[in-house]
Image 1 (cartoon, one colour):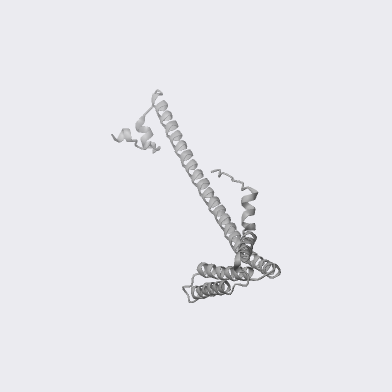
Image 2: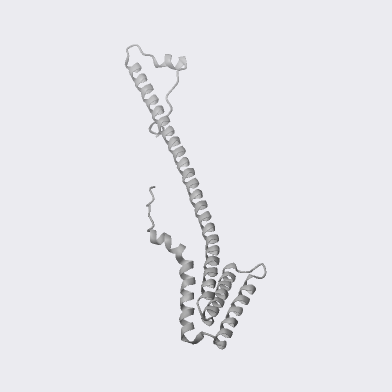
Length: 201
């Protein structure tokens, strides 16, 4: 079977690589817009973002506890906690030095986590391709063996039919010769043709 080969567009291949920096940049832009609209030095907004960040962090801790902890929920909660903390600091602070520093640290951390996920995904994809190739080779080998067996059986049946036809022709020709004695042939112990379905009927 020929499988259809689909080439991915370079934008589709590059989009996941740009996702972390796009996410952190979006948060930074929204936080600075919030800063310009009254969040700068607003104690109430800072307390709100701190409370939300701590709540998300606590949810991540609870989600990761015990044997039944869910890694996806815990990771999402911790990411939300960091995002809220980053947003709160970038919205509260005046100037761009601290928000840009936090943006850089958040981007590096996001790429670190994403690289681990990409490595796992690449390893699983390679293992899947290898497993599929092995199974395809095994099936192809089985098909070749079965084809050889079927061919050998067909050739054996053809050879047996040809031998039976030649023997029958020889006996008919022999019986047509003058002076042929079937009793003498039977007494000599010559092989007889096997009974066919037509003879049995």
